[in-house]
Image 1 (tube, one colour):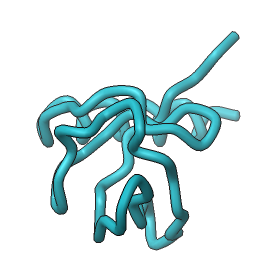
Image 2 (cartoon, one colour):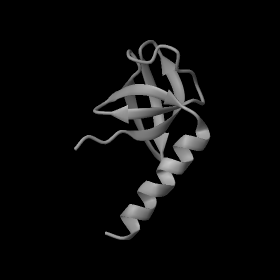
Image 3 (cartoon, helix red, strand yellow):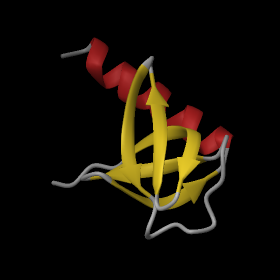
Image 4 (tube, one colour):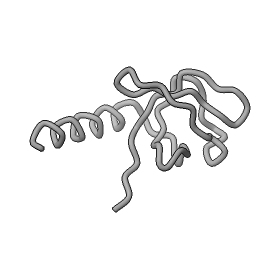
Length: 72
């Protein structure tokens, strides 16, 4: 099973973005999402931002992931 997680772009330098989720920051490739900009939410899969999503969708997905984690 593959999972893509929503993360927020903090900054961009070339084809890399610094992203953040729950206080954890990570550099990821945005080569597949050249339209992404600072402040956008993207779906992160294996180190690559694979699509830009809106904030409401990101928050809904993060809430569902937190709910699943609470029941583990």
